[in-house]
Length: 197
Image 1 (cartoon, one colour):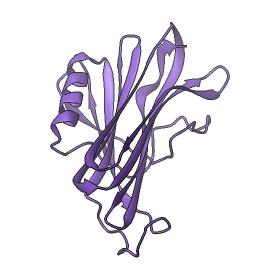
Image 2 (cartoon, helix red, strand yellow):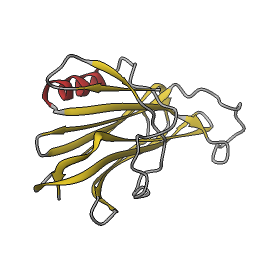
Image 3 (tube, helix red, strand yellow):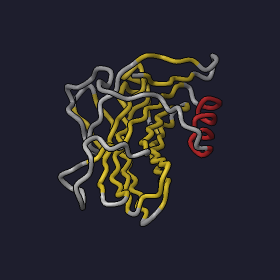
């Protein structure tokens, strides 16, 4: 369980953290700790994803990368499939901050072709004074056939009030007769940033 974390003022380094997959949308306002669950930093070789990571490393004050593998959902599959059949697809969530800009990318990257795909990205803002979450940007991507999907969200902060920021990504794909799903979220560390609404 690793999240790759990069800082503009230092070399590339690996930070150990945990991440939990959640559906796209607002999260529980009391859940302010590090994201729990089973994910790893991106270890693939997709040039679009690697370029986005390199750009964030060069320009962002801080950012993190989270990825999760798509898993079979037998309740929605068209035909019976072996339990835990590997999809060969991953969902990558990249959240970063550059000055007063909070932005994030969500990618789906597959080794094989999917015949249906939808992916969502939601940028959530947490107000610590009101203990509430609200959504500041949302993007949805649909592909009839392919191996890759990308979504982008951003928000320009209007003041330096303390705020929390979380990027939640989710996706659904069909490969053969099997329906796969993945979801993950990431948040900047420290969670409360001087970048408010």
